[in-house]
Length: 339
Ligand code: DAH
Image (cartoon, rainbow, N blue to C red; front, side, top):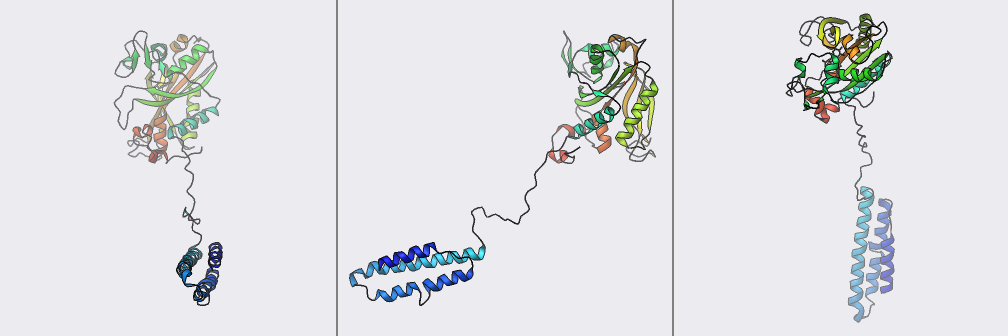
């Protein structure tokens, strides 16, 4: 009889059920009034007295085992397959989080792209510079205030080592090394000794432009910058050149674009003038050409320089400069990953 009980136990252990009807069939087969367990109970009467205890326990254990097995099969068909992971297969998968391009990179690439269409190529120079490339070769007088410690980060005095305050230094490096024609733009980071606020930072980014060849005129400068402004800010953009002063250009100008918020009518953003300033420019001063070893009787050229942050602010209305360097993902995620 013990053999029979063990055989039944193995049978029950191996039993499976695909649905509620299968479970019910198992219950009837093993646990109903005429089921296998009841039949064993009936046979129990004939078991010799000395085996009653052992066999009685085995039948009870079998009954418990069958009840638990059938209950768990019932639960499984009612609740679907039990898995340890408890996966919800109907859930939308979490999307990949793509990185985004930094707004300054987006704008820098766009600027490079626009000037590339006019035949400009990219040139670069070091951020750690000397007085000659940042000031002297660019026709700064010895007592020019920009040379002051207040504006410039000096690393060393003798020999002089400093952080460049503008990308105009790359003009000098390019012209010292090569002869015209030049048609280059020079993006890069610059440093100034300023207290950090929403409107000023101790480092920012500029794009410098240089065009030197025979017969280059102010009209070429104007047309190049008009093309840039309309590609960057839209075909209806107007430009205005105001006389200005830079040591390295003569004549010098500052360029405004028509305010694209109010279309030039005047608003809070453009301080009711209808114009916003975007860059400095001018004809390369002959002293600069000569300092770099270029014959100013043969060649003329124009140059311009603008802040990438400023252009980015105009395009995306970023009101606080500090956002560009704080790496706050809530800010960065507002920009696109593709360009
Ligand atoms: N270097 C100037 C600055 O940092 C910007 C600039 C003005 C660059 C006029 C030029 C230029 O090349 O012609 O403010």
